Image (tube, rainbow, N blue to C red; front, side, top):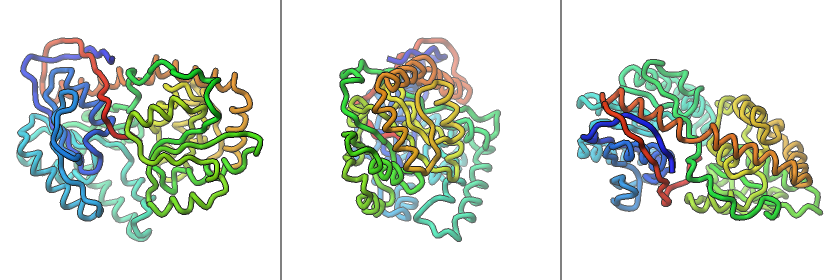
Length: 398
């Protein structure tokens, strides 16, 4: 349970969260922000891709169709989200992906209060989009940068997922709400660390810049006498990347689990011995701080991570893992093998990481920041203690 002191009044304001890309059960949107708002007294609905309308842990899900084509999604799904958003007649609209910026503008024209939840440095991320021709990426990145700067002035608040992202928006309107783990997920360890199999874990999306191909290659470099395996929980993007991965010698040591719901991810975390963050040093990865890092830590896993600035800051401060040069399979293989061959030291690193999340890198403090922003936007008064429980049916968060 997550207990948060916040300010509320008796008449619950209505909040409508919007997404045209992320599913309605996405972890940050539903189980962190949505659940915190519900328990603070707000009435929350989520308009997003989902099989059907339903109620989950006090949150009303209004399902919209998600098209498979990117163009159809940007036009069709966005239109359905906007239409349903108007039907909700909410006091605050809180949207979660860049494609909905025009929807946010239109809601402002209707006199609505609008918050933009920014998960990525989108202009920098566009420069690495594999599905866009290289010659057009700078122009699109520039256009998105202009749109976001305008939105920073127009919208009532910006919810930034990292400090780096927050610096791109007006300080007076911006709050940094990091996707740290819920303490509900600090479950008792069901299997002692030293009794677990030599399983190396990667969770999250799998794109060319995430370094997963290099990680698979590293598995092929491990000593044949070491019975280590790699588990991957996530989706290849693009799908053709999977065929390239299967050609790597390390694939014979790889168990590909595909996309996982939240319980599936927790099961993988409970079985693993090492968590890996193999991102390449490209684009906005220099400032990336992925949720997977903290999920590994709360599960008590020692970390093998690319030596990138934000990742280095956490791993070095907590002393919870080994940093290696990005894109170097040999270096990753050496670090993985060392941790498997030195289980006591690996266990100590994992325990330091777990304690750091329990004490600092958890959702409690972030929920307070989010609720403070809502208090300012809605003008709520009063005082109450909020307890946040974890919904169990939710989608994977990257």
